[in-house]
View 1 (spheres, rainbow, N blue to C red):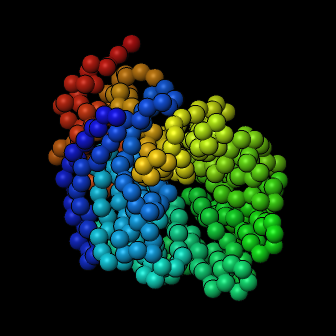
View 2 (spheres, rainbow, N blue to C red; view 1 turned 90 degrees about the horizontal axis):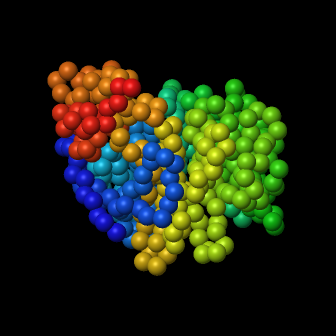
Length: 404
């Protein structure tokens, strides 16, 4: 497998005790034997042999956050991948784990000091760390609002987990009592979906719950063991039950596939999910587009696992090599062809976008909304992958330009 190194631009240091951004070269490998949709390619972000690699989360700027290391170990740290550059976000003596990121580059993760499934939730925004108090496994939306759990010691056969919601002003406790609520996802309307489980009975049972407009409602999942819900800004909710995936759009759920698990939705209605393949006993990644087309995006001896999908239909996910036990994060990204609008050609609209994305003294934030230090949407016009949009990219663009 050919190894390609991308050396990134210089990143500014975050001035904050214990938290540091370190510029690293991203080791990226080509992935073979897969069938991406037209206009996409596969890369791998090398991770290594850590015991735990968190589910990667991504935003519409193509940034990916993840943690490496057991959450009970002080060696667990948070990393950020951005346009070919891997940056270590935390470097300290406490476990930092399970990060999330939104389109503004706001990151949230849990800091756990005693090995429990709960620690403290912290936000990192523009170099500033904010501690939001006790909680675990935070998920955030585009507004910076977040949902996470609080854990109580087990009274019966499992710990109790309650849902807490940060609305930008304060933290609201949305569920109470002897409940086991987990797997929260929150959209930009502050709708939250999650799984409520009952572990003590045999077999265990669950419900899919939705918080919307101040009310908690049970969604009509057909399986008594439904789980792993996802929600998007269209209000669509998908979940797993009996090895099939159901999609709810405000009415009766639709079975979109009777072979699949663990759906992840973007705001267009595209879905990344997993299928177990009996012939080689592996989990493989699949894509279902909003118009109902299916693509098998992995076909290999690895165990491909949970991930995320952004609105450009780029996908990141975990992968485990069953032979070497090497863990990786894989990434299906848009090919840098000179297209900015992905309309199928390189034309005057793309040229206008290129002019706005040229980096230099006149490059202002309005031309590239998104996180500081990130090309965000302009990354698609960084055709040579060197971390900026300059004359070298203009030359490559001219070669692809077709005014007709």
